[in-house]
Structures are given as C-alpha cells and as structure tokens.
Image (cartoon, rainbow, N blue to C red; front, side):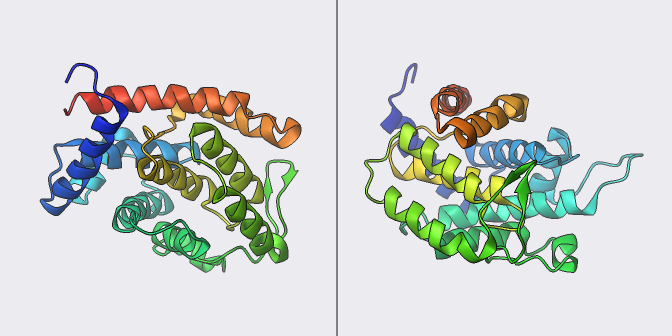
Length: 246
C-alpha cells in the first residue's frame, strides 16, 4: 500500500498486534512498537538503557554483555512498560476509567523494587505531594476529584488530536501518581488514538525538549498549540514507520 488511509493502518495495527503477540512474533509491527514505545517513553524519564538493550530485553529477556552496570530500576521499568502495553491491548474494548488507568500504573510499577522500598503507592493515586520541576501539582487529597473532572470532561468530547492533547496536558498537570505519570499518560494517549480511529502518537526522546516545553506552555498559558503541533509530527513519524510493515 503506497498511501494507506488512517482506517487502513489502524485496522492493520489492531490485527497485527493481536496475531503477532499470540504467536510471540518478534519480527513485526507489534514488537517494533513495543520496543520503540518503551525505549522512548522510558528514555524521556531518564532511563539509561539503549535501543539495542531495550530490543534484547523484549526479544529474549536478556541484556547484551557490557562493561557498564545496568541500573536495576531501568530494567524493571522497561519490563513494566512491556506489560503495561499488553494490558492496554487486552483492555481496548473497555472504556477508559480511573480504575483502568490504575491498572496500567500497576503493570508499569509493580516490579520496581525502589518504588516499593520508598513506600510509593503502586496501582493507586499518590499519597505524598510531588512536583514537576518547580511546578506544584494537585495535592494527593484532591487527585480523585480532579481526575473525576477530567474524565467527565473527556467523555463529553468528540475525540480528535486536539482533545487528546488537552487531556494529556491536564492529566500531566494533575500528576495523579507518585511516579510514572508521563509513561501512563503517553500510554493513554496511544490507546485513545487506537480506539478512536486516530494514528497513534509515539513521542520520541529526540523531541523531549519540545515536548516538555509544550507541557510548560499549557501550564503557564493554557495554550495547546505546541503540543498539537508536536503530536501531529509524531503521528507522521509513527505512520511512516508502520507503513514499512504493510
């Protein structure tokens, strides 16, 4: 297919994700997306694992021999991201709810020793205040209320990339979890694109500064212009990569 329509590529992705996952196929678009998404989303948050190491971890559960040390948390979170992606695929027929979002967080974080040792809530909303750099986020006691407002707003919308941009920016501003907000937020973004016939967004670490600046612009000015522009660019990037497999 030289120039497939959005529906063509979305139907293709949904079919191939299911088939290739069931067959443990590591050569197609399912495995490519798992590696691409997990590498970039974790890298944005400071992971030290390379693309090669991420691929090896996903493909066969091992890491290449190296003279460098591997940070345990990076490996645990990478594996958690693979599991979270699969949980997303398993629940695509379900509506997006706060309970489902908590399940995504549990898959991402349940195997992370450092978070458990620090007493972080796993698969539940934060119990301690946290910040984004110098910016305060919603206090723990207000998270459920603010998430109710966000979800209520979302379900009244006709979903498109602008709506998803606003949802993502508001979700990240709430920062509902102790850690893992960016990764759960980007997974929700990918999921809701798939569910609503929109080419998914995979944010590249190469565009990390542009991404953070766009979220900052929303927090300070309530403008979504930069975020929408970035998401549209990342859609084209992922669309181009997927066409190779068609």
